Length: 327
Image 1 (cartoon, helix red, strand yellow):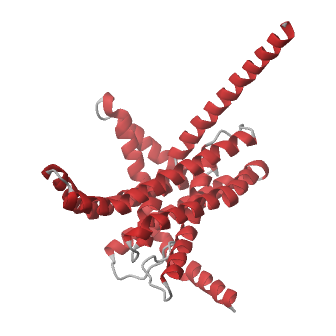
Image 2 (tube, rainbow, N blue to C red):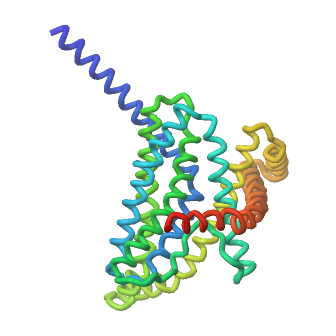
Image 3 (cartoon, rainbow, N blue to C red):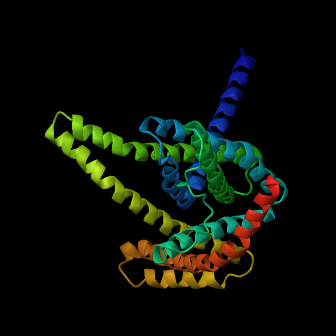
């Protein structure tokens, strides 16, 4: 009996250790996932464009297909690559993170540039979802899904790299893997669940406006229909600002880690000085706002500098590779 009790005590101890490990993984996944807000907002803002031209009955199935493709991107391709980098080439994480930050700066600056110069040629990393390739509806749907999944791959790579860099470096590989799996599944559900709500909000509002039994219900439906265009514009603005802020912050942190800390230190000192000018209760918020603003400004300027590189170097190389592949 004493042996059985000792065995049960050992099992209970192992269960406590396992539960603590699960709590650690969940906490680390939540913290890492919070760092990916900019790419997440960009993903949610871009995806609805791929649904233009389809009937309402196909919107949710298409979102489901893109979500499955996003999970494949994250778990089948990007997760093993992230773990290999973490195990065998951790020094590459900072440059890759800076590359993702550069892409965020470029994306944000390109959107600002086309707002200022509406007829300028595009040089963005997203495929144009507004195209209308010839063919039957199912072929068109598959092409749109394929384009959306390719775009998602870029954003998912940013998300997984940012999440990996946010995890403690002394974690065992199984904890890193579990945390990244939770980040991948949680963010995919959040992004595409949000996309599903966004694309069906008009239909829901229209239904309530027409079929609502109460005046208040019909008024709410009309309000939803009226608000959604403005909400989409606001989402794009917030997404662009978040991309510039996070992208600039990633690049500045990366430069500091690589030995060029002057820009990061200057912004940090400015934020600290500004935080002490106002009431102490708002010091933290003021400091964060100053830091994020300067990160975003530098991200915007850096992104503007990347636009000619993308238009006149990267795009022609990609086009040439595509022509060679078709031959």
